[in-house]
Length: 226
Image: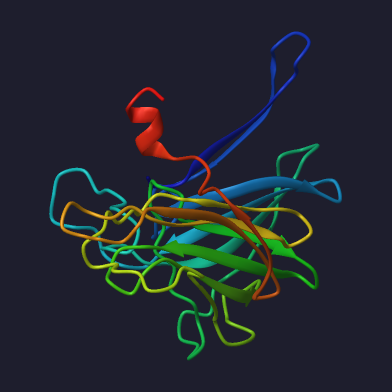
């Protein structure tokens, strides 16, 4: 993906009110659109400015999150009445605390606006033998980290993560009040004696505040028709 096409349409008669776009025709880098929302009369787009070069294939692609492409947080603001671009942040690529973001199609990396013109990056990670975890970073509008990364680790104990089924797809959502609901689970493989387990962890400000057990939903019973 190179950018975006933005259109404002009259919902009554369907006519186009205004149109705006950005892509490689007007910029040197691709932008991956993460989120769009209205704020104080403006349309705000959270994008990732891709800084890694395209692979040597005919059609450049954004590969799976965590693999090839890396981007920097960029904020675009449009006047919702006219469609004019009124603000476009320029990420501080050379800053020592810049956050490199790896967007992908499974939505396991998400960005949310928070107070004081800052943004929260939430990354669900489960692709190795260390188990499920969530990384949380707070960035300013130029993509620079304002504090150290918070890590939420799995609350499951005595787990063999090596012989289990990993997952890269998004398994969390974040409420506007900052609470993060995320699935903490183990799906053991055939040679793993670990008992299947699953909880919904609810975290806020980097701390677990409550847990909802899903262990009563026994998949073996459903499979056997009981």
